[in-house]
Amino acid sequence: MTTTLYWMRKDFRLSDNAALARAMEADGTVIPVCIYDEVAESYGAAPKWRWGEAIRHFAATLEDKGSRLILRRGKALDTLRELIEETGATRVVWGRQYDRAAKERDAAVKSALKDDGVDAFSVRNHTLFDPWDIETKSGGPYRVYTPFKNRCLEAETFGDPVDVPGSLNPPPEWPASDTLDDWALSAPMNRGAAVVAQYANIGEEAARGRLGAFMKKITDYDDARDRPDTVGTSRLSENLAWGEISPLTIWTAVEASKASGTKGAKVYQSEILWREFAYHLTHYYPDIGDKNWREEWDAFPWRQDNNDAEAWRRGRTGIAFVDAAMRELYTTGYMHNRLRMLAASLLTKNLMTDWRVGERWFAECLTDWDPCSNAMGWQWAAGSGPDAAPFFRIFNPDTQIDKFDPQRDYTENWLAEKTANPGKDARNFFEAIPRSWDMSDDMKLPTPIVDLKEGRERALAAYKDMRE
Image 1 (spheres, rainbow, N blue to C red):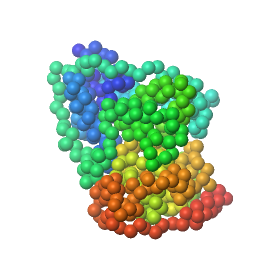
Image 2: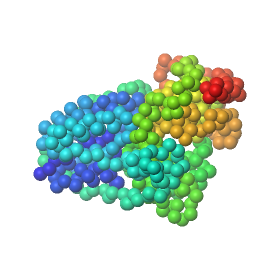
Image 3: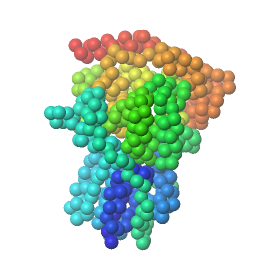
Image 4: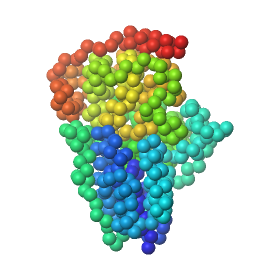
């Protein structure tokens, strides 16, 4: 009988799992495997913890289906070869990833396994399209979002989501496995892991529940999506990041709503395609997470890490809307998209700090971290990236708060200094942060570290000098 290793990375679900379906195509047994490899080792603290929780939950799901998730730690190729030797596997299947580190690993693994005489397959399992499926009329990648989106809509031939399999074809004997606790994935989070866990939405069932709740209010999405004081978005980014729900499952549900004329559905699908654009760009421009996409921005006088950036990380800039957002990030592993733009604008423009400083912090703190989306988002906000916001569009948090948090419900929920009796969310921030920060909920509000008007003028002057 054929034995297939299903190498799981970011696809912790049973429904619409094309890689699992491919693994089961051979008439034989399937061994799901997860490897704490060289790429996973590089994850930041919160992503590493959240990856571990996805593993923990899905391992239990497999147990319920009569299967198991085998855990091993080591370099991907070496570990797969060890498992092939132990199990007699002749096939290895995995879902594709598109960031540089993952692509380099996967290309090396596929080449080596094929040289070993093992059938190695990679399957699109994390996106609606492979990045190379969408090309300009002259061939090659898109550099601007709107024509990319339009081409995606023209090319839409997704088919239906893959059904949940019946039996997962377990082997008669299982290879040895690490325990998840052996990996100590929560260690980099220190005491913050217990706090962030209170806000996580883990697993396929929870993801589908969140999708169902969102579909009941998608009509209002176009207006509600910019309001952090209410839950107007789907909040599915966390589950998408770890493959606990597929983009096709979401697209199919939203398509049914769009057919009934719901404006919010059309806008939400544009956001799904913005995610696709991130993978498209990262595939064709693999340095997007490290280098300015627009090379002329190499001449911009970015400040490297500095005391202002540290105040920004700690939610102590004195700019209330941004400070609230930075505290939500550290406490929950999540930040509302409107506030991601504001926080990035303040850091890169008003504070003239290199976007990579912020990108690295988000990569450390986000439970919905995705290397492609994170890099593109930061370069978009900084002005150095593809389809970037014009540099004169420097968001003013003081006017934004009046528009998107008019009653200050969101801000006061996260800033303990704003009220005599701070709520649980505000207090949880101080439970999560490192003790070395020496912060407490009875501190006074800081004075603003930058005058927003002066910071804007300074950034615009630097931009003008760069262009001249």
